[in-house]
Image 1 (cartoon, rainbow, N blue to C red):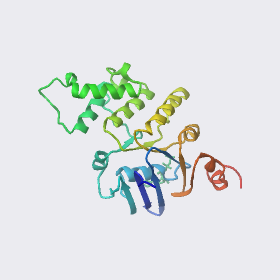
Image 2 (cartoon, rainbow, N blue to C red):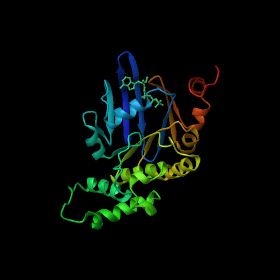
Image 3 (cartoon, helix red, strand yellow):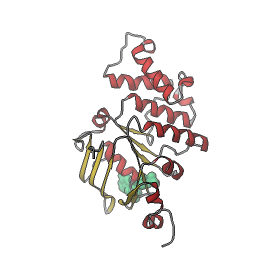
Length: 249
Ligand SMILES: Nc1ncnc2c1ncn2[C@@H]1O[C@H](COP(=O)(O)OP(=O)(O)OP(=O)(O)O)[C@@H](O)[C@H]1O
């Protein structure tokens, strides 16, 4: 097997007596969507925070693109191509959709603000930024301030800014939250295409989306992975049905 894009080994994190992450190991392979599901409080967000670098594990290994990233801060992990999106919005609300994506393009190019050039006419920024907006279906809303976009459109814009950073893997924490049925359907279709660009570790409560998208599913309960498998294996796993899908033993 080719080396996984992301590999987590025996990760542990406690808050006092609570073992929020209790020896988690999982990996994300190239081209796949790996869904992480589990009941409220299972430790899904805590795990994502440790991978993105906003929370320090007590022990365990995190390797990304063959490199141990445990000692890197969040910004350094993002620069390597680890894109985290959704639970905290990174958008500049007063700026247009286009300007938001341009900021990400600029960050990737490593250029500083060009005070003496009219930024909005800088084609090395506007052209790739428009291309990203087109990809997520927001080109028609390019000049609308982020604050005036609908909830679903803001999610699309967050993906466009993440794409502009040239990600090598996505960590998506509940992207379907707050989306109506139509928005969830559109986003599901889009995520389906996104896996070609970079694999996705997907934390999601929307089981329709998980079962439609996931190549593999891991089930987290009380900080431990109790099962990993494809959608059918997870649906039919008696322990999963008991612990998570709420069925009697
Ligand atoms: N900073 C913290 N300090 C203390 N306890 C915390 C902290 N962060 C999370 N926890 C606890 O760790 C456990 C796991 O929380 P976490 O938010 O990771 O779960 P989750 O699976 O993402 O839940 P949800 O599906 O509701 O988002 C919970 O019991 C939570 O109360």
